[in-house]
Length: 74
Image (cartoon, rainbow, N blue to C red; front, side, top):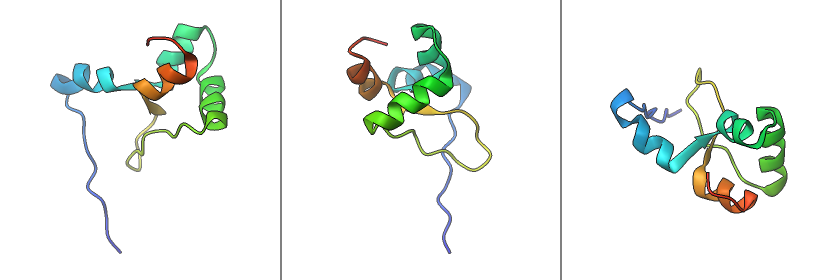
């Protein structure tokens, strides 16, 4: 059995992280809907969420894929 090392985003790197990725709750806020609706829509479109380490919470997507699906800039 092997374990993959978890990657941690340091506070100083958060801005760069958010340039590439977007949490479902941010997308929901921008669309005036719920994170659950965004997650369901992304699942139907085949857009996979970012793999998270055990214990991490939230659903995060590649910003370009989401923007392409929504035909908008996030």
